[in-house]
Image (cartoon, rainbow, N blue to C red; front, side, top):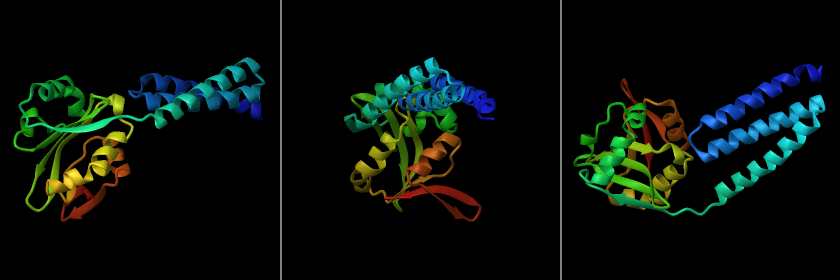
Length: 210
């Protein structure tokens, strides 16, 4: 009976390794590899395939070591404001234009004019660009909050909304508001970051109070 289901573990393990090659961040790559190794270990035990078992035990140890290293790495984050016409910010938005459109289809670089704008650097590499319209009632209406694929591990979000909370409060912001979210992956990020749905009439916003 157990032998008959072994191939399914092999198929799932292979699928995990394929997905690992397609994801955009080192963290996801390691997690999918780890899951694939575990499934291959089960597969090898069921079929008594010693070479497969030994290989995946070694790879599992390597991936666990890599994950510990990733989570334990001390990185330097910084927040730098910009007005909207700076060349570096413009080039960044143009370079990632297609990916930005997948998350914020209504956004254009012209919308950053006269807004609260900043970039977040991670070890001196631009990881995120943020732009919001500030209202007198303390709402910051997000126009853009884009993180590059390499850095989509929730650390940037924690930096902005937790470590830089005092900075946001100093701008008169009491809550961060998304009037609409187009991308399912970004919606998941917002839920993890503590955003909640608020319904007013026929309008549903995602809101995070500071």
